[in-house]
Each structure stands twice: as structure tokens, then as C-alpha cells.
Length: 176
Image (cartoon, rainbow, N blue to C red; front, side, top):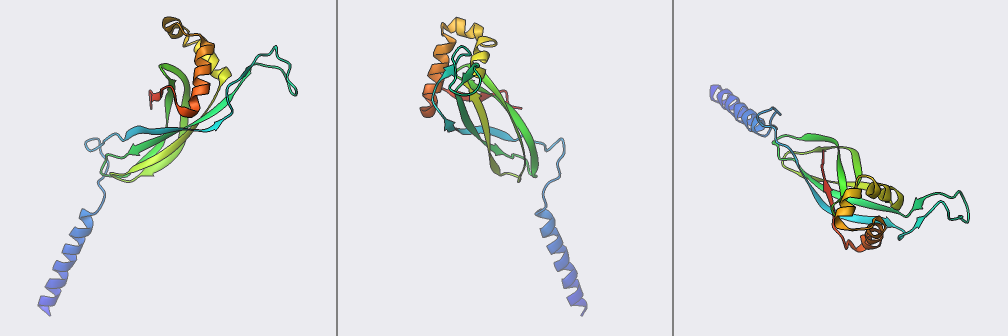
């Protein structure tokens, strides 16, 4: 009987130790590791071609104004948790670059838990239009356009007609 109770205590200790080694590490400043975020790929789920309508053009219906072709791009990111414990990602933002020109800043409000040592994917849609992109080129991008000897209209047309087959580099920068 005494042997049996000693065996039960020893077995209980072994089981407890086995369960404790399987527990996740506790987050601390010493073992904190930043997640790795990388752009997997970009998609163009919505595209209607290239156009720009000046406010001098009389529309068939609606009000005249400076309007441009919309285009949606989806940025698919791989987010790897390098830590030994699960982490919560509560959103991030990044800038979209067409060639070397920053054309949009996108926020992703998605909240997700990423298990220790695992990779999640997040899809971040971003809407563009030729009017907004033109204003970006004329204001912050004006000096770079001048240095490269490129017309803003030529850049817009190149990007909007080349977007479906990605004939120009689309990258992301300044993530936070």
C-alpha cells in the first residue's frame, strides 16, 4: 500500500512537470521579440481602366467636378510571431509607393492573435483614384517629378494602365 501511494505521488509529480513544460512563456522585456511583417503579394481586385474628368466636362448625369478612375489594391502581409508566447496585433499602417512616389497611406484596424512561432496572413484593401493620386504628385511629389523629368499625367496614365499586370513596382514602406 505504501509503495502504491509513493508511486502515485511520483507519477503526479511527473505529470505536473510534463504539463508545466508545455505552458507558454510569460512575456517580459527580456524575451520580447518584434514580429516580422513582410509583404507577400499585391492584388488588384477592382479596376475600371484609366480616365480623368475635369470639372469643365459636362456629365451625362450628376454634377461636374474633378473625378478620376477608382482602383482598389489589396496588400497581403505575412505576420510572423517570433516570440515564445502568443501576441496580439491591434492594427498597423503603411505607405504605398508606386515606383519611388508615395501615393497613399493605409491603416489596417484588424485585431488578431498570433500563436507563438506561427505566421498569420492579413489582407489590407486600399482604394486609389486618379484625382487623389494626381494631388499627391502635384504637392509632395512635385520635386521628384521635376528631377525625373516626368509629367504627372504621364505617371498617372502609366500607373493606371499598367496596374492590372504590375508593369511598375508597387511597394510598401514606413510601416508602424
